[in-house]
Image 1 (tube, protein in one colour):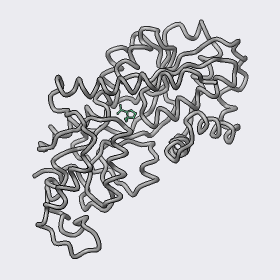
Image 2 (image 1 turned 90 degrees about the vertical axis):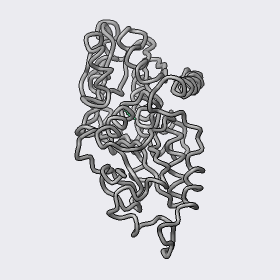
Image 3 (image 1 turned 60 degrees about the vertical axis):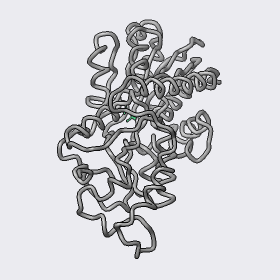
Length: 331
Ligand code: PBE
């Protein structure tokens, strides 16, 4: 059905490699992720003996509490990040500056960050990750955002649907469905969790659409069928956007369109809608996360408004870590 997804997946994989390689050379504070951060942390954990290990685990629950920087050595002064172009990465760099932290932000990918988080949690080791919600990781793991009194990560925000100039004239039915698309964080998390648990992306989206006919009906009610035209959706391969894009793709396919999806880096996702290479995206986090991309190109595309309200970004840690604020990462 959505035939280009697999091919595009390979392209996305390649582009992440390029991002990582590019970072090693060019970017200031973003480091290439070797994917072995969890291993490093295990070593650090073994070395760090200033906390007594009288508890059932080595999570330093009692000892670290209140002491600024108590986890920093064990964390190897590293925040585990995702792809360098993500807005949450720019905000994390901002936080390092705002709180004067001696931390490096390690760039990788959403999938690699989740792998490191899973490993750390399995071993009850400390870890700090760039986080956002909606995301199943808050349901799956006992995680908490660190307080952000400086506001480096902004306020709660919305996820917008953005389409290319001219789509309304060229494909009015698809435009209308995209304009009507609106759901809740819990819905997105259901699809994300299903994918995390092993269901194929397209299938997880299909199931959600089939199980939520009443919601989907609001998006397509009174809209004429398309006549088999191809609509090109673009996204970044973040878990949240894989879920949303696959769901709207299923709905568009049900309504007489062929859908192609291209996973790109964040800046290219915006550019491709702005220059008309792609028809639409449902992945613009505003006003904060994608502010830089949006402001740069807002005259060159059409913002259809929020498809989801109340999203957020920040730094998160496992609940067993006894810190509550980004300030607790100061030395
Ligand atoms: N995210 C998910 C993206 C937006 C969607 C929070 C990782 C970002 O930071 O750009």
